[in-house]
Length: 171
Image 1 (cartoon, rainbow, N blue to C red):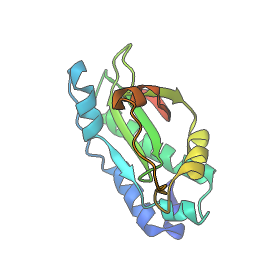
Image 2 (tube, rainbow, N blue to C red):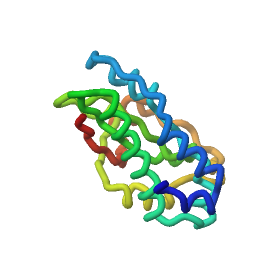
Image 3 (spheres, rainbow, N blue to C red):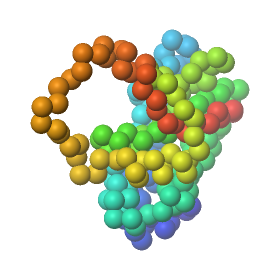
């Protein structure tokens, strides 16, 4: 198996990622308006690899290899079960949880990924480099006297820039 090196470094991370890659539980609709529902249902949150990242026991190249394995596995699954359909596979880092998140949705021409913010598409190496730098592995620091700003939540979301890796999978 492509991610065998993880078995020696952290069996919990290996088991979590291996299971997600080999037995995905994905659901799709033929309705363009259901893209957000697909994204939510097909969402996976990977946290067990954080211990290896925090202790520098896994490199950026190994992270790239690990998540490329998931992408290749899901691509094979989608091509086996869905003919003449296209999908968007995507990954991003959620620094506050912290976790690496991934999902797949049906692809529709002219339709962007289901996020309410500005997307900056990056390669996997850049994505994981930033995740390692920004992830709050020890929790989110709380400053005394900090209050929620008066900005509208929608305004904050629409100006937030999210780095995301994405790839169109054609079956």
